[in-house]
Length: 109
View (cartoon, rainbow, N blue to C red):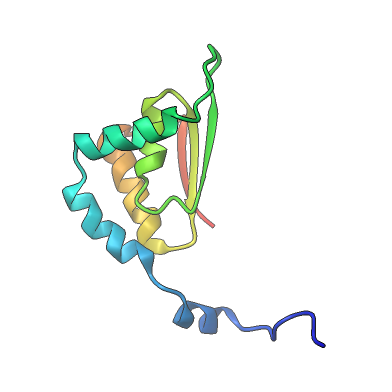
């Protein structure tokens, strides 16, 4: 019985995966303060009460909404996503709300 699946090259994987980032681009058009507040409140449910700044690692950042919410709550944020469009969305939010902020890094990976 085989223990691993056959390997695929990156081009085959790209053909099979869903491009979430295209949907996130549409979502950014309707993103408003109410939606951002909901994201912040969602994080606050798990947010520890402490005086030191927190670090927030957003793996698969998508639209960047939760990265933005974490930054608004005072965390140092590192966002990354595999999808080009998702990374562009997260970078667009950073540029809109926290341009040139050294405490929020966005990468593709």
